[in-house]
Amino acid sequence: MAAVNNKGHCYIWTLTGGVGDEPTRLNPRHKLSAHKRYVLRCKFSPDSTLLVTTSADQTARVWKTTDFSEVQVLQHEAKRWVWDAAFSADSQYIFTGNNYNFFFTFYYILF
Image (cartoon, rainbow, N blue to C red):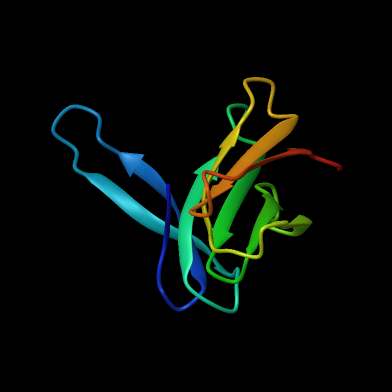
């Protein structure tokens, strides 16, 4: 599970328990200093090997979920906040979007 805040951080937890009457527990796993400005969105890839974060700093960043190292910085051409991102079904591509004339960019992930 992942969540972001307006300080540029992304927090990752693992979930345990939740079987029968056992409560589900959130276990902190990692804290990323992901961006220098507001982080707007985070999403895991369909194959769970990557995480993407989007930000007001005009970038989307791609992270490996094994060690949360940065794989790629995606600079948005329109120089606007990157509001959202979506992975392709095979986790090989990312689409990003901003609020400038519905501008979308398509990236091939290199790693």
